[in-house]
Length: 201
Image (cartoon, rainbow, N blue to C red; front, top):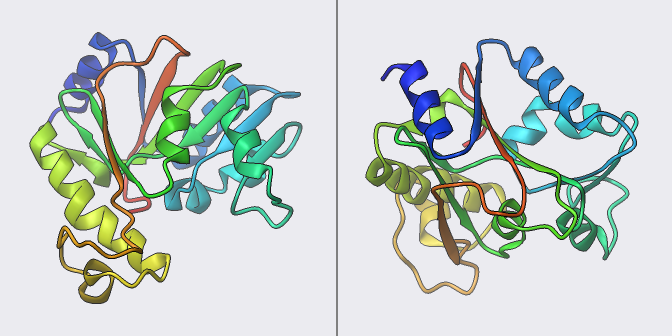
């Protein structure tokens, strides 16, 4: 698929879409757009952790991330209410769709709404891009979710076997909310940052 057409598709839906061949350039773009003196929330994301965005954005901003060593019982609430929210997606459809699966719901909810939100950033490796929405949903369910369940140590068939979604009824199931974002919500601008290479699940 042609990346220029993919970006055009996202932009036609109202997303601010960008492609970076270099991860460092993508990180600088996010940091410069956020600026300093802001509050930033980060959703659970292997991509964001792998890129070191928490460490970068913590220089000059107050960042709330439940993976941080100084997290407390208010971290997720503060992340949801932050001015900026940074996360990833489980898959992207080339037609301009963002697909996510969540267990608790804090991550997907915060990409849709925050009372004082100035912008949302969805940061993804090119490995998460699929030809169409159907394939993107399949990827989220059968590739990303099993890997995430395994990473989290969940007792689910997908985590044990690592091959596909079993649509299980396990109390430790992480596939509790599946969302498809087709346009930015009225809440705030949404940046879709696609980086050349493979990042996260």
